[in-house]
Image (cartoon, rainbow, N blue to C red; front, side):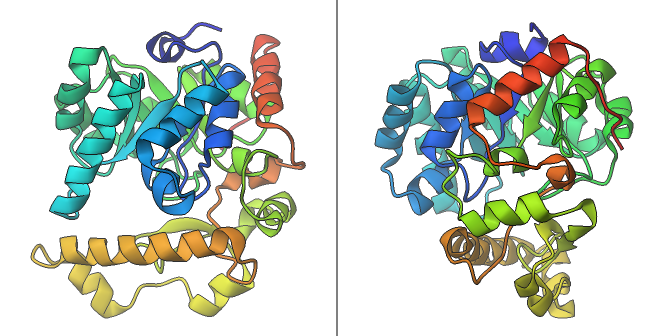
Length: 328
């Protein structure tokens, strides 16, 4: 299949295995790429969770597949040290042949400028039109439209509503959120999306190193089992409504909310939440009692653990055969 996304990324199937902290282990990223889609490495997962030196981790993935892989850059300047590390990671990725980048949580102009001499392409996460316009002002090449059915930091818009809002801006738009079946993948493409980004579906694969309990919870969950918690990052994050989450509660404290809104303290609060959530999510990856598991509403369509490559092939077959299902 040829779309603007496949042309930009140099891939065969317009399907992205989205970057997931802490679930983006190298074997999963490489498997999605080897099957014809593109896996996106998440640098904090690669180094902090899975224990790789960044350059060696990228090289390991390149040994697993000769096909393109991408990189996720969380670019909000929560701290100078973190920004400097992200710059270093991007430079190493470029040196190791990565040319496709997905940016989140900040102004991506500096990333566009940094990768341009290498022929790099940048797609930017957006949840509504105003953020899309800011991304385009920075020169991004495409948009990842994160809808209200996504895992992680979901947006406020539905699948079709969000495309109507950002689909006329002259760049490719990728659907992110709520696609758990091949039919839903085909339907997203039929709406005009240049591709689809999957996250939750790829957690329930053999290559993903998440715990069996996490994977089984995804298989057992219905849409109503996905709730929004403010306890993880201070702003709503889609997680499975486990006993652990119920004990934690879903709302941030009034004090935390005030500090997050204050211009003087919001960056420090975001840094605090980032460090806290990195530790919590890393621990929950293998500690089955923690049950702090991110997931999107695509859980409703996921019924088995399979190889990542088979996911890519089934979705491609559905799109080629125009099998489709309605999207909310």
